[in-house]
Amino acid sequence: MKITVAVTGHRDVVVTQTLLDHIDTFFDTLCSQYSEVRLLSPLAEGADSVVAEVFLSYQKDKTSCRLEVPLPMEETAYITLWPDVSKKRYQRLSADAKNVYVIPKVLKDPYENLGHYLVENAQILLALWDGKENHKTGGTAEVVNYAKSQNLRTTIVSCRRQNH
Image (tube, rainbow, N blue to C red; front, side, top):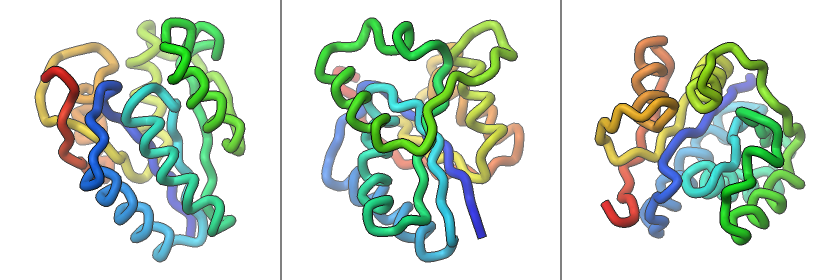
């Protein structure tokens, strides 16, 4: 059996060992239950990249794990405002992906469009979320709420944010 997981979360997530352990346990469980696990991660700073790094450790050990990188816009525009360290991390992670592609534009806002794409193309949403509603278009809360409205299985890993 195959399963597709999409990730959403904060760009300013505080990475702790506890957070990494939760992500590791999540993938360990899935990899023991499914013959193929596909992760959809746009590899943005923070949660997307952290989850992809943990996932790729399974990809090295199990050929049944596959990272795909759906982008909300062309790659150069997507990463243009990121700090150099985040750009390098993106390049390193995307080099290990099976597929990097720009998603079709359906909704006007590229990040709202991305959130809908992730929810509509996954069987599980993994959300690294502090649980706070901020009403930001395409933000973590909006993606989680959309997933719930679509009855998508959602796993929320509680996390802290920098400067919040």
